[in-house]
Each structure stands twice: as C-alpha cells, then as structure tokens.
Image 1 (cartoon, rainbow, N blue to C red):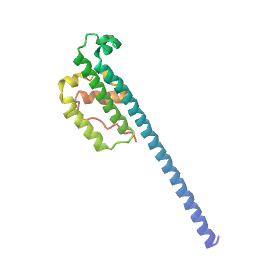
Image 2 (cartoon, rainbow, N blue to C red):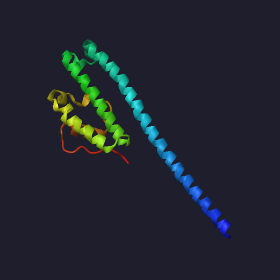
Image 3 (cartoon, rainbow, N blue to C red):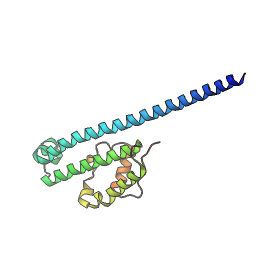
Length: 162
C-alpha cells in the first residue's frame, strides 16, 4: 500500500467515525427534543385542567355537584383543595422534568427546599396534600418522593434517570 493509499484509507476511516459520532449526537438531540415536547404537552394539559379548576373554585356548588364526597365542604375547603392540586401539578412537572434531565440538579434541589420551607410550612396547606391531589404522582417512584416531601422525611432522592 502506498502512502497516498494509506492516507486515503485513514481519512476515510476517520470520516466514517466522525459521521457515526454525528449520528449519535443527532439521535441524542432528538431524544432530548422528544422529552422536552412531552413535558411541554404535559404542561399544556395541566394548564387546561387548571382553567377548569379555576371555574370550579369560583363556583363551589359545581365542585360539590361533581364530587359527592365534597358535598359538605365549605367554599374555603374547596378553594384550598384546588390550590393544593395546582401546586401538586407544578411539583409533579418539576419531578418529571428532572427525571428526564430537563432541569439541572441544583434547580431540583432548590425547588425541593422551596417546597419544604415555604409551601409546606403552612400546616393547613400541608394537610391538603392528600393522595387525591396528585394527578401524575401515582407511579411508585414518584409517590415515594412526593410522600417523603410532604412528610418532611429526610433527603429527597434525585429522580434523574441517566
């Protein structure tokens, strides 16, 4: 093999290797875009659900007629429950975003601390976080983290899945 043929072979091999790496990068990028779109769709869906919740909060009799177990609830109990559901949805979104690597670890940890030191510092609000307020938090891993958070149980694990 001549030097020219050797150089051509090396360049061809390197070109194929670089092409392969580029394809891997595109595949990873597409995966991140898909995860991001999934969370955007989830956020949009939660936004629509919250519009309905605002309607129910402003018309407590509608809430009572839709949910028989709430027939004896006061207006304030209905409003408080709906606020807890909306806050729960925000935390669930943060959990899913962290799990999929769309928010950084320091943001996740800050969010957990904010929940513990601000949102859950209200005993009345803390008691509102019953299993019925979680919309997406019914998966085993998520349920465990959410319960630990509400019960202020030690460190909250990082849900990030590599």
